[in-house]
Image 1 (cartoon, rainbow, N blue to C red):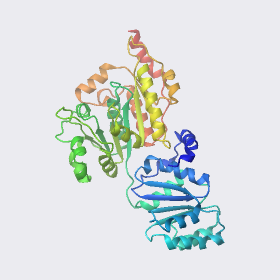
Image 2 (image 1 turned 180 degrees about the horizontal axis):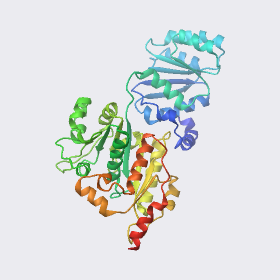
Image 3 (image 1 turned 135 degrees about the horizontal axis):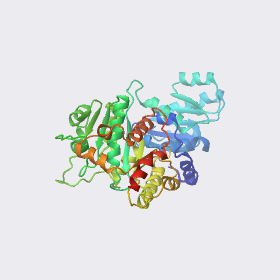
Length: 425
């Protein structure tokens, strides 16, 4: 994007992080199109630039120019027009028609045009639509307004809504992120009778097949290495059914090859799963490379799981700061503190852990090796092993929060009293 706004954009990104609205949540990913904007004011140029950096616009190619309609006419006199032209104008309605006629002389017939004006005039709006303008917006405009218009112009209104992706990642290895991912996916499928696809993305060491007592012949490896064949039918053949509404893309969990992937290696798989399933849960391994960064940056929601020590705090802070830059218009990640009140282990308190992160934990799960170990060894979820276990409430809270079905409750500190007794023993 344009260097002249770099400092202002940095401040915008900081202000926007964590302020995602329902309008932004509803915007679907924009297809691979070209967009050029010609603006007369910073107030319109800046939301367009911010929209261009949003993960939902990652496939679109966006350029922002200053100068309005006259600059667009001069530019397209010697250059092809893109899929979408966005024009800001301060002209009076009586003068606007003549300028747009000049644009029509140099604009390709297949290009769509959106005009952002400064006059709230229904007669002008109707006249512009009659002349073939795709949409008219009245300044000031928000990023959500712009992206909703683009989505409305280039996405099929009759198409089924795409599924939401929830990525679970540990701040450190061994913190139980996979266990929480599997149990939350199971909770979503049971609580809401919603179809869920759980993708175990740790190809060499994934445990989802063990935790669900599955032994599928195929799974996520075939999906990634055959991305050119990926469609609904192929994906369905690779899924292993774990419950009535829960299907698994299992990792091979063997070391017959190394697993080095390009940044977009999992994109076809995730997009196909989203077209067919309301919820796609991604069990992301604790590694940092191009593909994990890409998966996390584009997920609808991220859950970071950590244990209460200094290394986890440092790693969680680094993750959140990095995601803040790559996801400036999204909600901050959810934080779950796991394995609390482990006997004889010094710990950082939940409040002291959360303060430097600026994120309150959505769940506090105490250390209970007996129940969690029994569930893992028997290929069962916690709710199947001990239906009254305190961790189940956290899994349900996450299920409600991620799906938007009810507000999550603040974790109860009293929930740790039981484990205080364990520590005393």
